[in-house]
Amino acid sequence: MQIGIALAVVAALMTNLASLFKHRGCHRADPVSLRSPIRSARGLAASPWFAAGWGLAAIAWLVHVAALSMAPISIVQAVLAGGAVTLAVMSQRLFGDSVERRQWLALLLGGSGLALLVLTVPGFEGDHSGFTPGAMLGFEGGLALVASGLALGHRSERLADHGNVLLAAIAGILIALAGVAIKGLTGVGDVSATLLAPWILLVVLAGVGAQYATAAALQRGGAIETVGLIGLVANAAQIVGGVLVFGDPLSTSPLGLGLQVSAFAMVCASALLIPARRTKPGPLAAAV
Image (cartoon, rainbow, N blue to C red; front, side):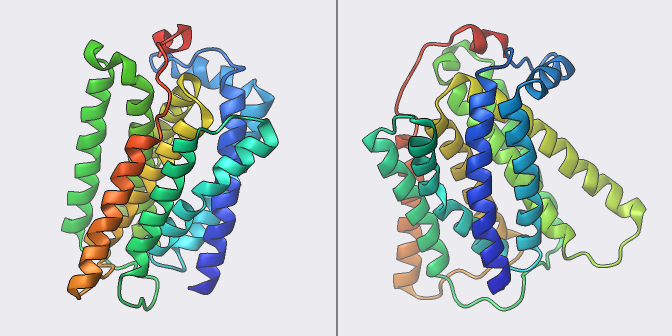
């Protein structure tokens, strides 16, 4: 488990840096259009910044998968969430981006809330990869429904001013959907390729959808608000998945449960604080 936690720390740093690279590359590429995925992918790939970010993100993903195979998903995602503060530091120091005070507060609040959630649970033993098919299907199906609902909301004119927030939330949910499925794959053991094929297809589809949603969100918003919100949603959803799907334990004491409720409240407050700036949709937004 200690090795898995160490790998999660490395994955957090690499993921944040990759996201900043991709944000810079997205603003130097043609507008992402979900109706023209091949053309959009070619345009993004032509950006050196985005290509570098994507390559680094791919390595970070492999490190993340290795961490999931060694430690409970709740612990791994809490470590990744705790690395959110490094996002603001790297964005400010490496790229000179301005970080608003409320965004610093949001990242600290969200990361602290997710860390508190895990610190208040009983001790873990093993990698907690076991699950029941019903729990897995129910949770993954719920995430898919939420993502579909947000996608419909994104097309609504009433929510046009919040398009970046919705796209970031969609990307985070799709990342969580793939992450929970990958965690399940690390514990299935010897299973025939026929049974694994639909599962792997789900991971691929969710991953590809998350990439397009992330790129579209990055083009429409700032690095901190977009990357921070994507990470917050993805990590929170996967921690919940750890409890509901893989049986990661909750606290059994009233004090512990109270702290965990407070932790979820901190995460919700963080999500409200991250989108600090509201900008009118520009040419990039109209193309999505």
